[in-house]
Image 1 (cartoon, helix red, strand yellow):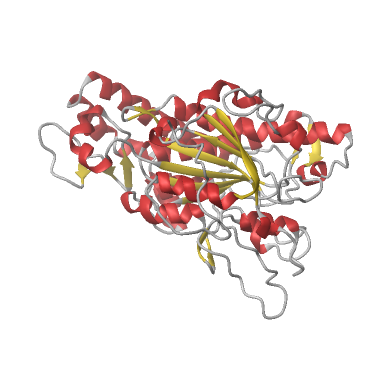
Image 2 (cartoon, rainbow, N blue to C red):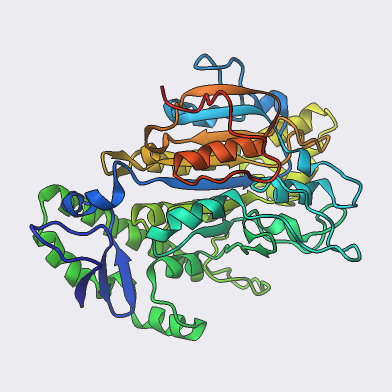
Length: 453
């Protein structure tokens, strides 16, 4: 076992790209005080990170939208779970996706919504004769082209909602299963298995049989690097020893949670085959995937991710919050107060999961601040009113300060007709990704109320 770095270590300064390596495992370390001198030239004043979280089936505007604009706003029932994060919250209302509208080609509103979200491009129905799949490089991948140059994993594309090949609205099901496209013809398929995500971030690869053999051989991949971690701890200061111990414990905890999910028993009940390692509880499952993403940020394994929290036409019920109804069915509330209440509960629950990740980022130190200080999470979807299938006034929530470039703690009411892609261009500029246009964009937000004063 050895300490592996990409640079010469001098004057007791550790490079940021420092790994603990041994027995088929490479564990990247979190930001330590001992890394600052060696890393200062690489990272500059801050390390930008972007996350894109998609929720399908639109919203109920009267329960989602904030009252008041600027700094003087009051929380809505859906966004109330984010109240403790007010100083990091930016809500942008009034954004549209005109390219998700029906252009008479037969594709359903739901597939067009997810296809347009990060592209601003209309998704034509590829089931029609002569029609090819053709969108554009999504905003997350434009970011990954730049931010991914500095990380082992270029970007992560995750999902906690099962992909579908049927019941996806009229037209083509293809578009509801991903929101990330490498280029105009190549989608990035999502990964929903925690074990695969964990091994992609921290394992050495190999095929399924090799990974299974390695997992059986070692109770935890951390066992093979524990001795090296202890030697490293002896050479750094007290603050770094605490950070290192806390970090390694969190990695072990997540691996134990994955292992527990794989060994879940179901008594004598005969169940159909299902992927091992996905917890039976959706709440546990979603939080496990979010914790993996947190670890990816902490180790600088990747700086860009996308996650489908709820795909379009999702049939998932939520009995754990008192909503046994399917999500899509509840979104078509027809102004029925009971269904509106159920849809509101579902939307607030999704927002609470976003808050779960953001709160952990807020309490995780990174450089001169926290992960949430350095990052930006963009949460929303390509459909506004889910009952009417309209693509105006989209749900759009930002969390984070992006290295001080975002003036958070406000509600921005955009002028009517502002494309969602204008926001995406504005955010990309702030992380050094300068592109002329995305899809139907008409320019940057003007004035840019996002910018810190």
